[in-house]
Image 1 (cartoon, rainbow, N blue to C red):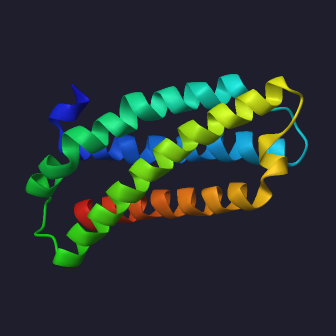
Image 2: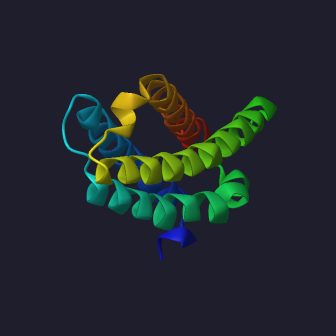
Length: 142
């Protein structure tokens, strides 16, 4: 099982989070530019995010710290807390805007085009969340 090896599961999660981010960006940005809303792709991505990466965060938060190859500085722990809170907020945000975008698309409208500032703010925070997660991966394991 991958969760029995903290380094392997952390590596898988770090890589898969980049794939999830690419898919989220693709769905949102392509819809912003006038393309169709790809609800199936976004909901499949969201399902994977919940099933794999949220499971990782829940099951590994303390185990990774205990199994880190080097002692961690206090600021790394604080960064981890910030990342965890932001990531949870972004997951809830992704669920919310996915539902809103789906409902808008059923009425022939584009949630992301109609709410550009919110969309750009969401994408910026999403990238900060992913960036801090990737930074933590390297700080802990390398």
